[in-house]
Length: 552
Image 1 (cartoon, one colour):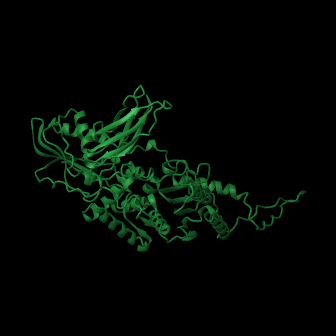
Image 2: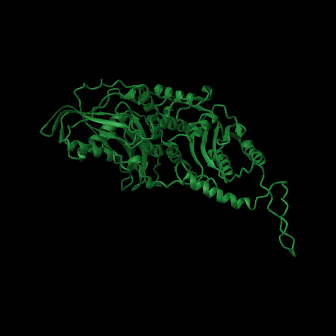
């Protein structure tokens, strides 16, 4: 057996290179020194001018007033934040804010710091931090490919057996072409002399034995790509792109295609081409899943010659992966039987997120041909944290359970995270863990929990992998369009979070005089537009970035 390390790693050239902490610090110190030259203290007394060395005909100019003390600066900061949080628009909202200087052990601001909040995707801060600690930045996901049968004259007389352990990187997002790793698998099979497979493509083992979906996920979001289920084999982060192509003439049926797999899932289209304003009502296209037939149903209208794309979650991750593998093998010229993938018999159970009872693992007679290794965790983290990718978080959640307890279930993953938080000194009444992504409305975190974990990560050997993977204000990820034109742009590295009535921002910022701060801004139960909540979070972050804390 040999291990094939996939050459398909995240191309960091497609991301803007984050500024290093050293560069940020140098820039901040330069800005601070310039600002200090013209700083004025409210009510401060200017220092006396030095005695001239020679007689002067004109009086000496006043010296620059002393900078305000750290205590005065912090007091003004607290007043400013209070005025933002106490705005009448947020009379029914619940704010939790904590800002600390971990080097000095100072708390600059705290409000409801130990209360529990629905964190949304700020849960990914916890999941990724614990994963780096438990698995290490060089951890790789392994997928084994084996033959159940014998190889004779270029033909595998039997099944091709795939044993997965949750590799989340076989996707357009990570590889820029989800089929590329599977084409590499096809090349490896051809190198083993296999040109024909008489049996099926089957999944072996059951690394993730419980439900594909997270605890408490909203049932009406389950066709959305962000709610796609995960399993030990997953393709393209669990979703397909359904593209509707309008015909040339109004009234004709539209054509529907799927990608990255052209022949899976099956699609039944009821879409017609309708010219706007032509008298026939237009209906935005929708895609639903018909569990009785195991197919997608596309309804609605599209303008002639127009195209529209809807992203839809696969209903069974393993079956989608095997269909993609079959497509890659056929592209390589490997001959397969007419129906190489057998769909699970309990499709309805899979759709509902219930555990599926698959066939027993294959007998020891399976001959492992090779193993495909994913890129290392350090390269996976940016694909998780910058766009806030839910399926990678859920896979890490279960993988921690699999690696540490031998069972890749959500309960095992939760146990690993809770044990790590306890070892970090986080009180057990300051968190409730139910999934890895924060999509569950049963997750709860206190701002103090997030700040403690973020502060501890600064001392971890994998800190730079974690820090560089976070979204950067005004540069990339989920805050690429936020805080632009402020001191926070290119400075703040922070994780966002958003589910209905919960908006979060937690991370790191360096002040104008080079002090590294850690913060967490959580808001629940607001009824104003979400942009109003974001404006407050951004204003506080920008204030911190422009802050000069001064002398003690």
